[in-house]
Length: 67
Image (cartoon, rainbow, N blue to C red; front, side, top):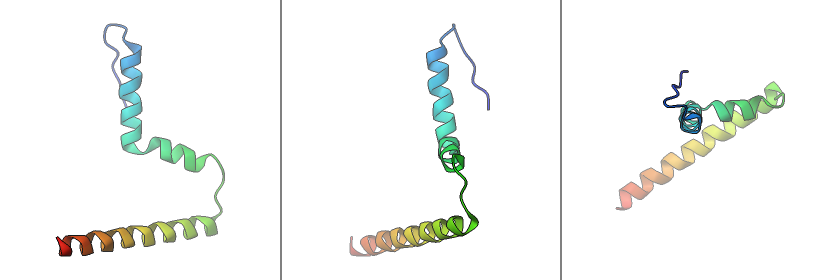
């Protein structure tokens, strides 16, 4: 990942860097890796995320059918 600094404007470069990192999910990844997550906890979390995505998808599909 590369961020260029123009006219010694470091603040702008930091904003661009943060935006790029956020877009790539780096902050989320760092937050996840802050503490060790047991494999069983990881499976449970991934399963819950999948269920959440499915419910959201179904909710959007039902709303699209109504409108």
